[in-house]
Length: 349
Image (cartoon, rainbow, N blue to C red; front, top):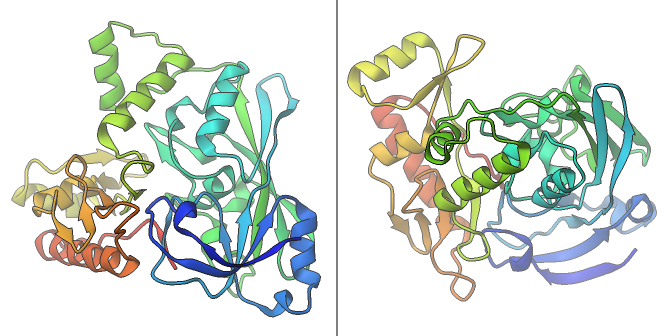
């Protein structure tokens, strides 16, 4: 185990916010975690897990011990008549995993191409895009209990997946469930279908089929389309710092949606299988006039109102305070107009 002090975190968060970790340990395998748990000084410190840094907003220097997850590895773990089960280390970049699966002939993750962040963070957030969620392809994961040092595995049911939600985002309650702050994910396995079928139910993908005349795309074609769509809509964190979609798409009842449509007939919405309706948070924000607006060096992206960006770059970066001031102002205006309180996606530290 190598303990580092006063480590700059600007390279490790995609927003590019300048902050320091007072103490940081790079976790490359289970031994590094166990060393932390058995060290007399480190064992008593609060901890902050850091993966790809694509879903956090730093509001100051991090006083907790930062566990920088860097577990590597990509392999075909097993296969059945119906699935290939691939395994990735928690520190592997998510997009790198998606590209690797296609390079090796294992389709199924192509709709999730170019999502920033690491493999270890993907179950926490139950990431999703273009009609596919992680839970649709999830097999199991390995993690370590930070209280006992024991390794354990979870299947999909035990992860408690919901919309951008999982057991890893909730503190343990009376029922004993909830692993927030208690577990570190080390490896994740995905069950990818041998009887693969394309997921093409989103308007952007339908538009690509019409434009190209290709109505039976293979997985590689969908991968290329998704990459092109995301690059056209979303800023590259290497060029403009951001944390991706900043707010969750809210869900409402049929009655609530009808009330909003009566006032704003153009509201973008999608019907869910459970009868509820999902509203496009980006449309709500845009309708309130926020696209392109700024607070200090934090701004709303000109091409997509759902994304908040670092307008100051690496040299004069926005602060976490500016980001959260802007986010709260957006929440207030959307609530005042639509009666809906938007929920941020990133973790605020």
